[in-house]
Length: 464
Image 1 (cartoon, rainbow, N blue to C red):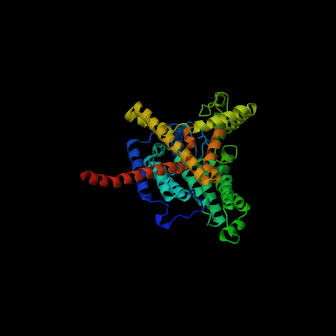
Image 2 (image 1 turned 120 degrees about the vertical axis):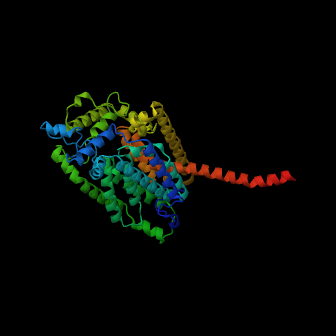
Image 3 (image 1 turned 90 degrees about the vertical axis):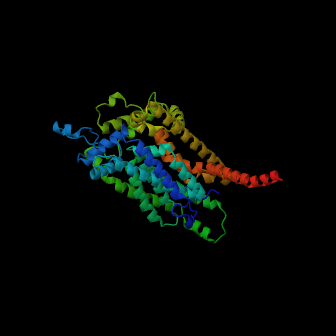
């Protein structure tokens, strides 16, 4: 049965709440170590920008995208500060560079640990939502997911952001904890996640919705007057999750404020985290756009990050206002585009893959990555339908996994889409996909056992 997030997990199954969790994590570790041994880190594009900015931070030049700060200083100029991307990923990488020097090995090790932690939390949540066996299957799907293990050799934010989102959801749905402890810890996790990607900034609203939906679903279940369930319902008001979310938001913004003040001082505007919102909105909303990544218009060349951000935001908003119907249809198309493929992990490693194995390997890995993605995505949609038929439309539609999937899909459908932007949904997609995958596995096992039980009888009768 499709459980509520408040369902307890049997202690005998361990902290992750599902059988053979250790073996699943060991498999995930082996796959990722093998990939890292075969494919070296060779940064390009965003990964290269993270690498450059991390080196600058480690060298004491501050957060800057200047690829040659020494040359800039030698010319008597100042190294230009940046706030274009969120500082979280390069700041942590800079710490590793400070300790170990400019080597990618610690980055890969950290990526692997973060990936394993993300799988572990996904297994725990799925075991609560569905069953311990479903948690194991969801973990297996993630362990063997090409787009997941391919990111351990990229200096990127995807795996880090996923873990932050999952931990926030895990903490927030510990309904037995005091509301203030959940709120404060969630605020800390939200701040850390925002430092990686600011799209997490609106998650307190999503968490309030998750709590309201869970409470409404409980109200729909019958309970005797005066029972423990009835008392709990009456004691929990609609205002409590709002207060908790406000407290979490206060903690989040408080922890973000030092960076916001830094941006106000050195960038000319108190950008909360980054200054790429305008670029992202423009990429998905300008004449001729296909909703995906695009080169910025030439008139922005030479602009400061602040001026460019303001200019692109205005251009995108003006275009949306001028053609509102086109905006709606484009947004709907972008939802499809967001889920159409998964090959970004190949792109982040394309230099090493092509150098070592040739262009055919690049094409082959893109086919494998997209094929696996579409297979699991299709399975997840089947799982959604099965659960709706089994447990009812609202229990699925209002479930945290579906709500979070919808949030990240809606955000990027409004701004810019690319296969990398569906990564926050991957854990929830794996959870839903575990439903038909586990059912198929159980059917195959039952069929094999039935066949083995019949075979001895057949041989005896044949002998007579």
